[in-house]
Every structure is written in C-alpha cells, then in structure tokens.
Length: 99
Image (cartoon, rainbow, N blue to C red):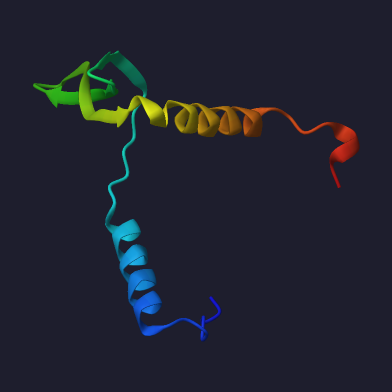
C-alpha cells in the first residue's frame, strides 16, 4: 500500500485507529434470519446458523443464534442497497461482456 505522506499527524493517527478498529471487528456468519421486527425505531434481526454436535456416536443437528443485529430504521436503505448489490454480483455476466 502506498504511504500517504501529505497527511497531518492527526489524520495519520485517525487513519491508523480506523484500520485497527476494522481489523478487530467480528466476522459474523449466518444462514438465516429467524426473527425480525421494529421496536422504537430500531430494526431487530436474529441471525442463526446450523449446528452439528457429535454425542455417543450420533450427530445431533439444530440451529443456534450467532448474533442479534440492531440498527436504526434510517439504516434500512443502506442495508437494502448493499444486499441488492451483492445479489447483482450473483447474476451471470453476459457472454458478450466476458474477455
């Protein structure tokens, strides 16, 4: 990565803190949203994933909650926009646009 030499000391510190905070943020893997709603202008989603446990030579399957997502309803357009863009990336590229 190229070094930004024209940054002030304060800007460099803010940049370094932002990079560290981003690296420390948790990665959340989920397979379904089991519950959702709104309470007092806060969107609520419960994120779940499959879970498999081996016990006495048997595999027991179920699901477990991995996160409770909370966000202001004002963030819904941003979340929807990101999901729409991810969905677009899943669509095949037309043959004429391929190299």
